[in-house]
Length: 183
Length: 195
Image (cartoon, rainbow over all chains, first blue to last red; front, side, top):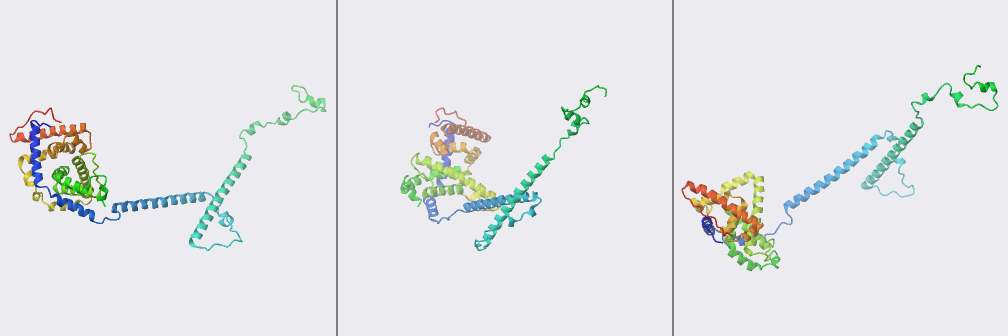
């Protein structure tokens, strides 16, 4: 590249700077050896930042799981609370263990599992019962329903209008049906 | 262990010899990338050599060794700068104390930069945007062509040319302003055959 005018000047200034930098350049061997000694240094099995990130992730997952479980429990409680006659259904009426079978050793975990199953079954039963009751109430309500305008259809001459003259009736009786006939 | 990873690239001993030849230029480039902070430039260069030794930066002969090395230095300097910024944010008190310990006047090279013209020139360079400063440095200081400069900077040759032209313009304006105050005029004509 041919340099002209101020480019020459800029180039000269850069060359001047380069000369000064060259005089103050650290020795290659020194920098290289320092780098080489760093490669020899035993490296940490895992970085701190990685550990911190993993811990954070685990915490987030645990809290998420706890939160979702809590939310589910609250929802179930709300369903149970909405049914008024919850006391009528007991867990004993829902799950009956087989009489002949040997009960498993009651460890803490087994107990908690069983109680959870019982609770779930009871809740399910309660919900079903509530639904059945509701449908029964609805059916009764439909059965006893009366139209509000039904009274308008009732009149004093209903009997006359609804009955038909019979063949063996007397003429006098038949005449009574005719309008504008002197009695 | 890291040395073994250089199998497909150049042999480490050969590479070391080449790096030694380029060491001075590399340091100059590192200084430019670190805004002429000598300690930081030295650290960056050491990190680059470490990367090469560990095989994290592997020369595959796709470009010239000089442009490859300069690109690695540039990336490392940017990374180190970012890290230092974060460190300063976290430990602002400690870093301030540390910076006050080393007086800038004690650093070598400062005496040179005290020369008036160079001081003006360095100030003018510092006032330029990073890309423009890089383009000018690579062309004028390292005597690279614009295409090589573009390769180092990781941009297209068109962009490199733009940064080079704008940088030159800004530098000329800045130097013109400052030198006119001293009664030195050095405006010259444009070089039509540049690049």
